[in-house]
Image 1 (cartoon, rainbow, N blue to C red):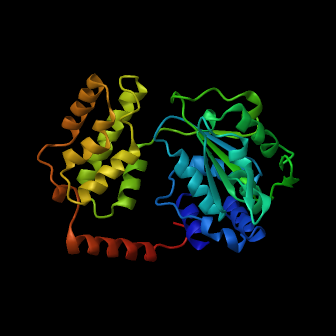
Image 2: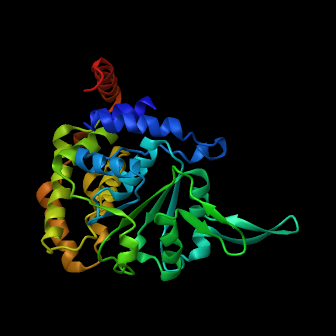
Image 3: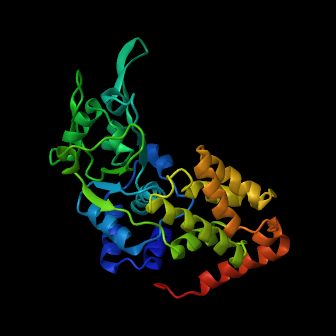
Length: 329
């Protein structure tokens, strides 16, 4: 647990909330059979204000709805919260074929008996997990009807043909939604009223650089600023409706850096991670212009990453500094 507490303190989260998180974890231990569902995220979410709102909401027994534009870290925050609270996580991605049986479970034949194959919402309720409802504004009415009783004060699931189950006191649900994607729709008021809503702010240069430094400690500072500037330029044009959000892809940018680290020339990596995701010719040309402005053609892999022994020395120095930091900084 110390890793999660250190993370919260590094983010500047209030000690009162941290103490409550510690108490929550001690009060609700996780059963052995679902320990494997407690996952450490590849990188943690950055943003004190949003983090404090989310932690406070979950401690108060509320469910959260994270909404906002693309690349604001909604899923990353959801995964980070499950890790902070030490809860097993269940990811439910809504699409056109997601119905009530997908969420609760369906009958199956086992050992000459009809048994319920338990769905993710059922398991989340049973073991006190954190259910991450991804793209909840794509849910069909049949699936939404299951969520109503689960998310409100009743905190129960009525399984047709079986019995009702009461939610574990540690169970929480975190919904995420983007606007304007194909297949999305407006959430009805009854469903929204069952959530506390957090509107995710756009990513800033400071946060983006912190993410890149944490994932790639051997990256050269000047190069990381070039790539963060590229992303922020695309983000600004998307916010001004000059571009669609197709090229606004943080996963694509981080993936491109991974390819560069593996030896692919920077321009080729950026084409794969960002430019080639624009299928409209005019839009693609606009993104290519931004790339040419930000990323010099002569830029090489060695200009982006420190190689070999030097990188190892930098990592060891960074680790040593963390150990020397007094608790609470």
